[in-house]
Length: 187
Length: 357
Image (cartoon, rainbow over all chains, first blue to last red; front, side, top):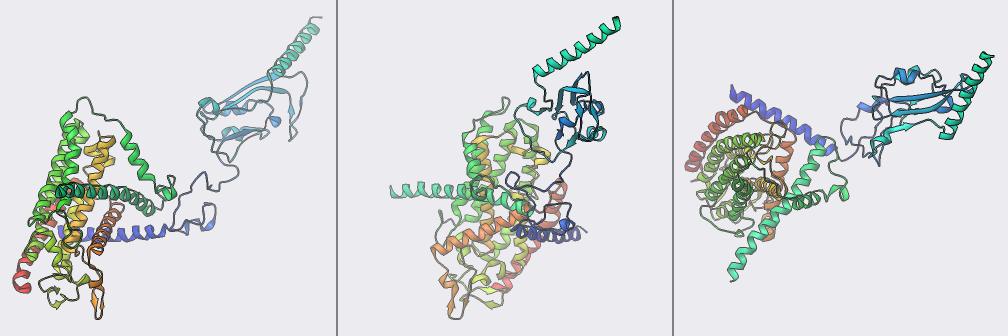
């Protein structure tokens, strides 16, 4: 009984060792195909799978769930992405404009200035919900994944393009517009 | 004065060999582990990571001595020394080439068995002295394992000694090649005294010694706490086992002892079963390959290359087989290896009386 189990153990051990030595000698070369989207990806069973990252990169889809990117010119500052975000990593402040500012590339009318458009990638859970709700598709996920930093605040990406003076000016314009409206109402 | 000089020089030479071997073996181990698992292993330090272990040892040498506050200071400090010196002394009787060995003892084999057992005390000292439950558990396991596995080792050695009729390792090797004084028979029927080579190794002088060698190999794997018998260190259960609390050069010495032990038992197996410094090439007619490849330098070359091959097999096994459970370990030892070793011992006695005489 125990002898049978032992012999079986030895036999399976030898089987396993033959398997590992196959891999040991198979490691002389690297696997050719690193792209999992290719049909023949699983055909190669031997060879080194390591991708020596900074020198060598693995092919990834152009738009995958990696870092977020905002095309601020196309943004209508609707705040939908910030509302959709489950972890509240998007911080948007808007300044109203008295008249339409311009049009986005898909034809939507912009009526708000983005005073602040911060995305905290340290909080982001890469769910992609913000990219789904965006009406103008200005917030997208890119193929960038390597943004290592030594400071946590470096991970807060600032996509707003307005300078402080500009913000002040736009705010004044809006207050003036409001004041004018109030004055017109009071007359 | 000259003798004193020699007595100092030889241990230094052996120590440097062990240190170099350990540096090489750790690198080889990590590379083998990588290749077996389809990885690359160390690649960044030096060309193909070849300076990795040198960087490792430099790091270990620079570290400060840390002794846990509740540890038994004396035991804790003495344990690495005991563990390493136990293995180190074992090299004293190992023949490297014909008549080229530090001490030509008539009780060489017995001496090795005795000093290697001291290793267990060192491990217990380390585990107990650390005052850490994982260390203590690790050392308890180590002791249980090493004491149990000393029995199949002892029995398999007796099987060989019955045939060799001597415990002098130097003479044991002499009996396995072209320099033998007594006639040698391949499997007991073919006179290979003049042919030598592979056929005159003890493993081929009597067929049951193949089984004995397997028992010896498995038991020595357990004796040096190598996977699949690494339950004393069991990284996934006990952090590091008995050396959990060690760091710096003390850890380096424990590590050195582990690799020195691997080489020692591989070399012992080579000496007893695989012809030691004898060449594997036989004399074929006028091509006296065995005579040509026997000598001081050839002897050292064959000893080291055979031992390194066995060390390589140990590494290969480590990265193939999963760890044994404690009860499986004891079952294998007491219910399988020891009975078979006893049977082989009996066969050895019969073989000596009926076939070899």
